[in-house]
Amino acid sequence: MHLFQKNIYNEFHMKKTETVTVSFVVIIVLVVLALIGTSYYFFNKYKKTQALLSNPTLAAKEEVKKITDQVSKLMMLPTKEEPIVVTVLDKKKLKDQDFLKNAQNGDKVVVTQFLNKPFFIDQASIK
Image (cartoon, rainbow, N blue to C red; front, side, top):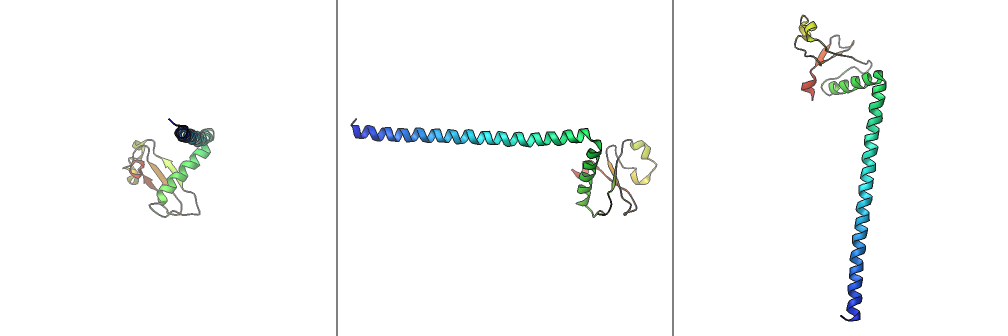
């Protein structure tokens, strides 16, 4: 090999290794950023869960908001009052009430003063 051909080969080989090195560094940086983002997301979820566990009132308000958001997609709810949400725990006690005779354990009953009548939500049918 002549000296000129050797220099061209070396330059090409050096550029190739530099490209591989830069690509490797970029991949490592992207992986680290993805790990940091994932850690941040799950840490925030953990903090929110701990706050709900330590404060049952906050957990109840969160559940009421979730249910009213689901119901408000189906019908208009009054905006000036917060509805009361009750969970059916024992359907046997409700068998004599015509309105709730089809309710199952775990269903939610939403009561508002504005509507003058309660309605129940079958949790399985909403999902």
